[in-house]
Image (cartoon, rainbow, N blue to C red; front, side, top):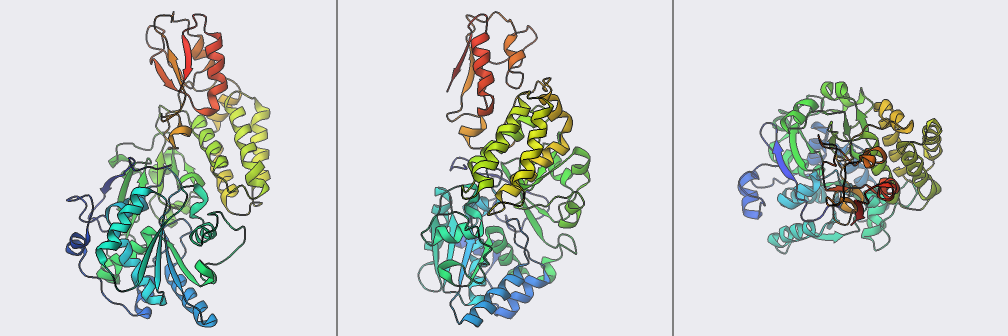
Amino acid sequence: MSGPAERPGLGCVGAPRLLSGLDRTGWLDREAHLAVHGPLPRLRPDELTALASEIDLRGRGGAGFPFARKLEAVTRSAREKDAATAVVVNGSEGEPSCLKDTALLLHTPHLVLDGALLAAAAVSAEEVVVAVTRADVEASVRDAVDERGPGGRRVRVARLPERFVTGEGTALVSGLGGGPALPSGQRVRTSERGLGGVPTLLSNTETYAQLAVAARLGAPAYRSVGLPSEPGTVLLTVAGSTVVEVPSGTSLGYVLDLCGSGVGQGVLVGGYHGRWLDPGAARSAGLSRQSLAAFDAVLGAGAVLPLPEETCPAGEVAAVARWMAKESAGQCGPCVRGLPALADVLEDAVRGGGRGALDAVEARLRSVRRRGACSHPDGTSYFVASALATFPEEFRGHALGSGCGRPVAGALPLPPEEGGGGGGAERLVVDWTLCKGHGLCVDILPDVVRLDADGYPASASMPVPAWLRPKALRAVRRCPALALRLRE
C-alpha cells in the first residue's frame, strides 16, 4: 500500500482553497493554519446544516451523499433514542490510486480537524475519531491534535489495517470499536448505529475540510467558484501521484494536459471501482456529477488514471483484478471464490486463452454481480466490464494470441509486490555474455521484452507482473543461449 515515501505532489487550477498556503510550506502548523485560513467561526447547528445545504456539500469519499442530510439524520436519531453521538473522519485510503485525503492529513490536518469539530458541535458529539492507516499520516494528525492542547472536545486518532475494504462504513466502525476492520455484510446506517452503537456522523477527510472552508467563506463566496449546480472545488489524485485542486466543472482533458499526461489510450475515473472513458469521452467530460453521468461514470474518491500509450491495457487491468481479488473481505462467496476466479479467467484471456477465455470472463462477471455482502464484488466486476467495453480490440487480440507487444508499465498503481515495479517483484534479467539475440524471448513474452534496433533485448532487467510469471519461466527455459534468469 501507500507508504511514507509516497508523498503526493500538489497542484491547483485557479486559486487554491483546501491547498492554500502549501506553496510556501509543506505542513501548516497551528499558527500557519490560522494565518492562512483565519479563525474558525462558531455556527449554531441549524446554521451549519443550512450552510451545508446551500453549498450542496456532498461526501467526497465515493457515495456523494448530501452532508446536510447526514447531519439531520444523526441529530434526529440521537433525539429519538436519547443517545450520545460520535463523529468519525474516514482518513483511510486503501486504494493505491487515491492520495487526496492523505495529502490533506499530511499537509493541512488542522483544516480537517476544524470541519470535524464544527460537525461535532452541531450534533453534540463529545468525541471526534480520525481513522487513518498510514504511520506518517497518524503522526501528522497527532501532532496537530497536540498543538491544540487540552480542553474542548476530545480528538482521538486511531490507526487501522491498510486494506481496500477498511474504508467501508461498517468495516471502519468495527475496526474503531476493536473488532476486525471488515464489512459487516448488513445494511446498517451509521447515523442510526455507529461507533459504540450510538448515532455517528461518518464522512471522509475532504468533506470535513470543505466544510471548514465554507464556514469561513460563507455560502455566497463559496459558491463563487465552480458550477452553480455543484459549487466549490474538488480534489483529484492524478495518475496515482499528484493531488490537484480544481473548480468543479473543469475539463478533465484540460487537467490532464496540465499534468503532462494527456488522455492517453483512455482514462479510468473513480479508481478501481470506477469506469473507463475512451479518449474522446475523456476530452469531452467535465469534472462534475452531471457531466460524468452522461458517460456512466462518477468521480467517486477522486482518482483519475490516464493510461499511457506505451503500456498494455489488458495487462494493467488483469493486474488490478488480481490485486482486488486479494483485497476482498473474504466473507462471502462472490469475494472468496468469485473474484479470484474472475482474475484467473481474465489472466487466461490475456495470455492467449482464446474466445472461450473471453466468454468465461463474461460468465464470471455475471456470477459475482449483486451477490456480495458489500459493494466490493460489484465494484470490481464493473471495473473489468468497463475495461472490456473500452478496449475490446486489446482484449480480443490478446485472447486470440497476437497480443499488443507492449509491457505492463504499472500505470495503474499497485503495491510494489503486486505491481511489478520493484520492492520484491521478480525481474527477467539478461546475461549479456551469453545473449546471442535470438529474439525468442520477445515471441514468448511480448508484454515484457522489447528488442532494440539490433534485435537484442532493449533492457537488461525487466519487471515481470505476477500474472506473467509462467510465461517468463517458459522464456527462461527456452532461451537457446541460456541467457535469461528470473530474479527478485
